[in-house]
Image 1: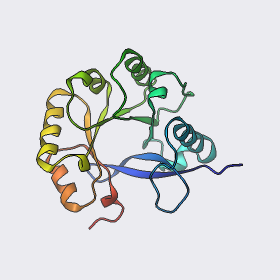
Image 2: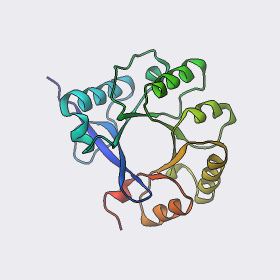
Image 3: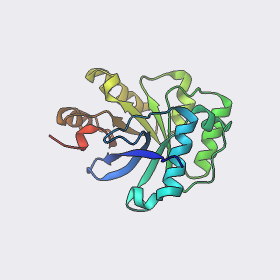
Image 4: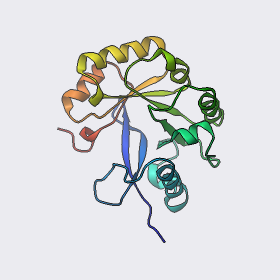
Length: 196
């Protein structure tokens, strides 16, 4: 029988308390949170491992901490069906998901089932406004934007989209402090593993 592995990375709120964990498929090597396989197989294996092999409460520590799992376009659109899952499971939607009727319907279904939706983001795209409005959380990667561009994008989102802002990729106290000044709601990155 093949051993399934995943890694988890905490997501913190403004009080530096764990708000959620993001689960990643892993190859089982120490400190490896990079997916070793891609797409639908990785999503399926993380769901199986989280629900069957380990259990949500062991992963999260309690029933109130969300567990984020990355979804592929096939799962968002409904081409690949998701099993009935606990409301504790939240979904991270990748940046390459198109703003089309199938995906909007798929996101609406996840929201109707009381799942939280986090949407990956780089820069504001008016063609994706319908997707942004479906999201509970917009994930902004600090590594993909210059500091002044990060400030501009967060302010733009806060003005036009009701979702909360999660900044990921935070590796230092300075990056964390900068994001706190911008009033992001949630924070994620290697900095929280071993703060300066």
